[in-house]
Length: 130
Image (tube, rainbow, N blue to C red; front, side, top):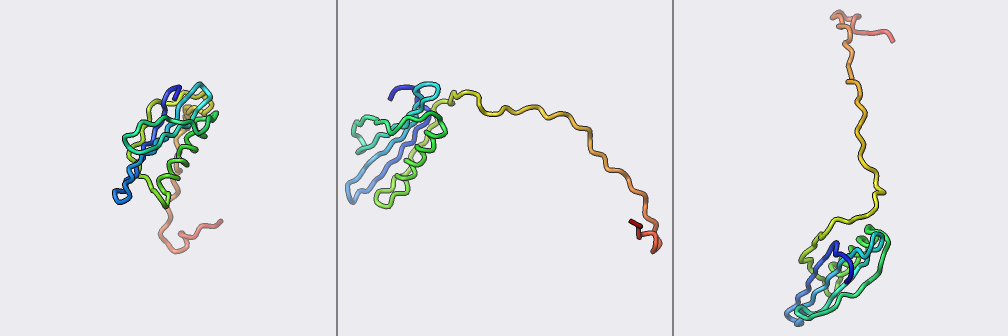
């Protein structure tokens, strides 16, 4: 993996009856300003495997969606469902400022409720003519 690691998911699957002890790791790395690569690494726990790139995308949001889909496909698999062991956010993403920034609200005059005339207590005084 080249670039800086941004986010990482680590999953494990254990089945002592079938002698299965596997791990699956998905990570997002920022290669440059507009290049994000999703990597995966998997194998038997204790083995030394190399991370392989799944794909490179131009936005962090697209890379995160792909990573979530990959993690979900392993967690909710009918055959070998993996358990999420850890999810780490490493660094904040340095993307261009294309998001709106909050602006100060203009001051508004206070809302005043006008006082109404007191209603007379006789029968016909309660009825107001439109």
